[in-house]
Length: 460
Image (tube, rainbow, N blue to C red):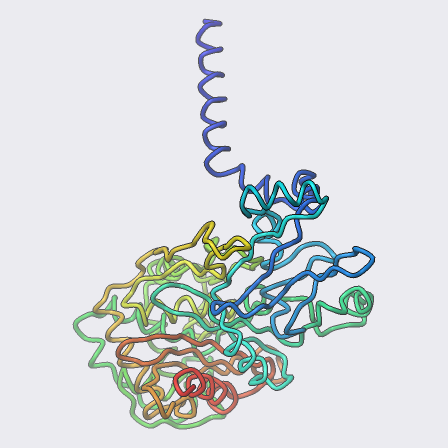
């Protein structure tokens, strides 16, 4: 008996060791509290962080006194995705900490540096981001509170990630007290792209439409709703944005015109359990494959939910909450023919001589919709921009597919302005999600910002 106990313990120990080597060891090694990593800074000059084209975003300068200073070349433009290291490690500075403090210079150079008591040059980390696009997105928000995130929907590469208001990591020590003060309500240190939680508003109607298609595959195209601006359902009253009357809308027209009454009607006809399961298949109430700090999105509908809960949830209100990055992941799934990719922000690492040390590659996360479903939604999202609420997102260089959102966030009618979409619609190269906090109408505020991003990207 004792022998079997020891054999069992040995098997468990061997299993844990195998798990640690395969998965857990990297987390321990990369932990900023790991003394081994801290000691590496004594013999290695921290490497540079660069954009996808080799433009330097962060580098280390050594003064005459030998003191090293981390310099962020774009100031606040890359603050959230790149992060900082003077008050702990965040962003890419944290994700790539071990890589930046590793050196793969040649043996002879290491030997000479050791004799001369010089530090070795650390490896350089190349991100997936585009410095020009990042700067444009930063300027496009024009100081408003909000976020913009852009990716390649086919690969999951993050091309731009902006959160405002932000901070200048070059002045972080001097501004730390004001940034972390209880009186500061701006959330400068919060990466709104990954950690922001907002009602998605009408951008969520993409998923409501998908579930309706699935439950009524033979009749969804026959859907028709007469909108006079206000939906009355028993004692419940739900208005369309600004009480606008859309007239008679079919399935595609309901999405194009973003008719609340039409989607509330769809929502009331859905199976609550199936609807909730579909949303979880798209990542709601789930951990997401995101390396940066993030918050889970939530969708709270079950068999106990009231009709009002259902009506609100169908239009992206109620208790439904979502981050801009998650919104982009869902949009990109439509663009990528039903396949959701793992978002990533580090492309590869090179040594000081330009030789590739390691490289990340695109990875599929899941396939929450079919190619046929994606094609139908894509056509409907084209109509949103071509003839509906998102016409201000149109680009002179490519056909845009998208969805607007005006998400109410308080009892006084305050609204966040959303737009999410991709282009070219027939063969998407980029997807864009924009939110302007308290901006009002998504079609009037967020859509033109997205349109300018599409124009910049395809017109440069």
